[in-house]
Image 1 (tube, rainbow, N blue to C red):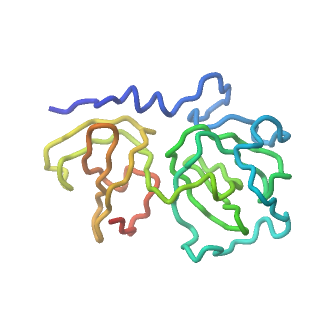
Image 2 (cartoon, helix red, strand yellow):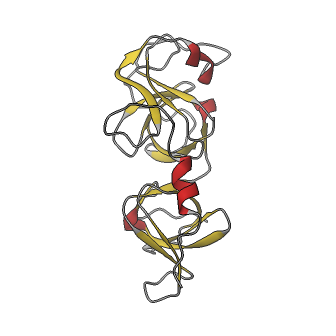
Length: 199
């Protein structure tokens, strides 16, 4: 029997009260044009500020692939217009575990993009190598990687799930949330690449 396992709880974690951001997923606050650094400054305040030159230059600072997916580590993180705390804040993200895509690096800063295509710079301390995905459409989790397997749960779009593994040459990934786990199709996820192997 298919169940909506704590779906409302999962969706509730994706919302932030009082955002007033038209058309958003409720993942962040702010204005698209950037706002002056104020109370949210500590959400990315590194010990040593970076210089602002070459703000848009892609680089592989840590030897990790670019692009790559990461997750938000901090309970609150600023997305800025450039790789330094001197740059204006575009958005303030308030959802730990949210998947983001690193598309460029500059010293200790990472240019990241969210599921809606918003991009900007975050300090690397705000990010984690743990993997998660966001569902892009209604999805069914199965107890094995097959559409003919036993259904475990039915989930709505925009639910965030932790990635357990994505086998090679497989169209499926094993994911988990709360007290259940199952297999979902990669084509219904944002946060893993089509040919990526996660073990």
